[in-house]
Structure formats: C-alpha cells, structure tokens
Length: 235
View (tube, one colour):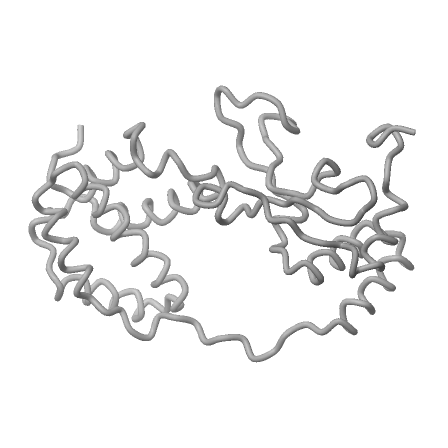
C-alpha cells in the first residue's frame, strides 16, 4: 500500500478511482496519460507532496531541459501534473489544494510550440490524390481529399484501434481491440450531399455531430461513389 501524502499515492488514486477523470477519457488518451504518470512516478513517487513548492517545480523543469527533453515533452508532463493535483484537491486533500494555488500562479513560459508557417495546398492534395489513384489506392486519395476539404483531423477520418474494455458491445471488434472515431457510411447521406461527423477530440464536451456539406465539393462526391455498397443504401 502506498503512503498517503506521497506523489505515488496521488497517482495511484487518480488511476484507480472509478470516479477519477482518468476513467472518463478514451482508451488512447488513457494510454498517453498513463505514460506521463509512469514517468512522474519513476522520478518523484516517494517524495512527499508537502515538500513541493514553486522552486521545486522549476527545478524539475530545469532538469528536463538539461536532459534534452523537448518543449512539447515538458509541456505535456507539466500539463498532466496539475490535472492530477486538481483531482486530489477535489478529494479534499490539503496539500493538493495548496499545490493548485502554486500551479495557478505558475507561468511556464516558453513551452508553447511556434505556429506553423507552412501549410499544405489544394494543388498538393490534388497531386497526392492522382498519385494514390495511379498506385491503386483510391480510398486513400479520397480520404485525404475529405480530410483537407472538410478540415478533419486524421483520426476522425481513418479512425483508430483502442483496447476494448469490459462491457464494450457492438462496433468493430478485432482481437480485443475496438475501432472508433473514423468515418463510416451511416454518417453520409444517400445523395452524398452531406455528412454528420462527430469530433473525437471534443466528443465528451460536444457530443452532437458536425454537419458538413459535400454539395460544394463535387470531387469528394465523385471520389466516394466507387466505394458505395448497394447493400448499405438498398437498391
């Protein structure tokens, strides 16, 4: 049993409590959180939260920089830690409440990655689609076209495989994995004029699907037609 008041105890509660926010995120997000927590546990598990202060947080950040960690790595881990601390504060833990105040006052400057200066163009997408068709992968070309024209995230088009949980029923299952988040035929109307697509990133906060028109994108419609299955829409 881990000792209460240590970082190990807080991480243990956060991962194991059925009411923890950790249990409400998607499986792939839970894996990312789990990796972050594992690294924090390896570094500070036995330390008492009562010993943590602003200076120590800055020392941890400096140690990551000295070890050559990227800004995105540091930002990811210093985003994870306050999340766990806020959970502890919700449990009523005094030290977590104190740490919440420190995190609220802490400005981790210089961790945001610079904005992109280069973007893919429609001509580049068109060239990719032509190349995909010639290579015998028209579905890939159509997918890239839809992703570009509808401003979809890649995962909202191709989907992803996550480890299935006990109680998962329905959907596409394979060897203990569940496929989710991708575009399926039931999201596209018969006439290929629009799609009702959920956003995997904001599914918990905005469960209603996005209604995306295809009428002004004839190339997308033409790209989809070869893949239509009569059994889906009937005769």
